[in-house]
Every structure is written in structure tokens, then in C-alpha cells.
Image: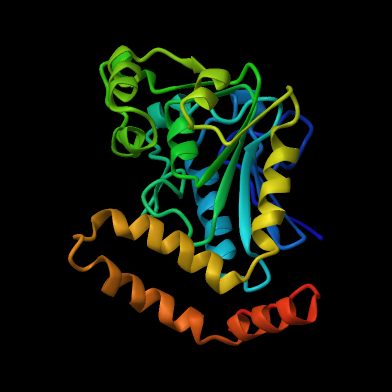
Amino acid sequence: MVDHIMERVAAPAVAGDDRCPPPVLVEVSDGVLVVTINRPQVRNAIDLATARRIAAAMERLDADPGISAGVITGAGGTFCAGMDLQAFLAGERPSVPGRGFAGLVERPPGKPLIAAVEGFAVAGGFEIVLACDLVTAAEGARFGLPEVKRGLLAGGGGLLRLPSRVPLQLAMEWTLTGDTFTAERAAEVGLVNRLTPPGGALDAALELARRVAANGPLAVRATKRIIVESRDWHSSEAFARQAEIYEPVRSSEDAKEGARAFKEKRPPRWHGR
């Protein structure tokens, strides 16, 4: 089933057309929500309309019990070049209240989200990647936070997240110089989960997402929540805080179904309760 978001982009239509291409495409398949930033003419730069549609897709990802994981990618061989500067100069701020830049970086979804990167993921585009839980990238793709080269800061989460994803010295080098780096280097330091031939990032992300979606949905969401939230827990309270999230999952119908399926040597039938 394909569900394309068909509202207009806040940009002039091509002469002779009464509609613009949709800025975001959304497809659901096998329990996976695939979100494609669809502005290849501007290297998938984010304007306000695009941010709002990504935010709506993230809301859907979390709200739909039939969806267990998400993938975000870009059309036309580029992931995302960051903020649409033309829209910014026209007075737009591509931020959604409560979710931040691109409708994502300040409040990622509670369910797992995978970035599938081809071409460039720079500035805000890289910050979208850092807001995701897993990353696949094609050989030759490039990442970077070049804001300092323009007298700016990477305020969409790049400075907050990158030091926890790579060694501190690398985070310092990449943010202070503003230089880009390759997907191969990102894979070497653990920032990329799967390195693929060009054109293969989305397929690799879908394979990962389907493996996630095959598992118990309550357990998957709780696992992500514990990993994310436990960074702020003091060691003296960590197990008690974990138990608050873990116990409802252990007593769920899905937990019993998982045990039965294992005993009966069959695939589990999850109900999300």
C-alpha cells in the first residue's frame, strides 16, 4: 500500500502544471514506514512544508499499531543538504513546534528509525541522520556539519548527538573544521551500520527495518526507550527505572505469545498488547 502525501509545496509550480511534486512520499510495507524527502531539485533541502510533512509521518509511525519501524531517505541520489536557504531568506523557519528542525530532530519517534543515505547528508541533513537509531549508507556518500564555515552552529542536535556516536576527538575535529567525511570513514568508527554499493542504502535499510519489525512491537519500543532514556539515569536508580518500563512488557500478551511460539516452534503472532 502506498500513501503519498499530496499537499502543495510552498514553491512555485512548473509552468503548465497546476500542482508541484509532493515534498514527502510515504509508503507502508511489511510493517515498515518509508519516508522519502522528495525535493531533488534542491538536494532535498528542508523547507517548512517539508518539515511539517515529515512531522506528520513521524506521528503516524508512532500512532499506527501496524507499523513497527521507519526508514527515512532522500530522492534523486541525495539524502539531504540541510535547510532550504532560499526559503529561509524568504522568512521561513523549517521547524515544527515540539519536534524542531525537519519535524524530527528535537523529538524523534518512539519506534526505531533508520536513515538510508546516498550522496550528501550535510548540515541539517546530517542532523536528521543523527536523530535516527540506525544508519545505512552507500559508498561515496558524505556526511558533515559545515555550519562553522558560515559562522553558524549546528543547532539541530548535531553538537549534542555526535559526541555520543563517535570518539570525542573525531566529533571535535568534524564540528570545528566543518569538513565532510566519507561513508567509509563513518562505517570505520561505528556511525554507519551497513555500508553498501551505490544505490543500495535503501534496500539495506529496509532489510534492517523488516528484521526489527519481525520482533515483538512492545519489546522493540521499550528497548529503544531504555537505551535512549538511561543515558540520563544515575547508576543508583537505573535498574528501578528500567523495571518501570520492562515489567509491563514482561506481563504482556505478546510476552506469553513469544514463549508459546518458541515452545511450539512457529513464528509468533504479535498483537501489541
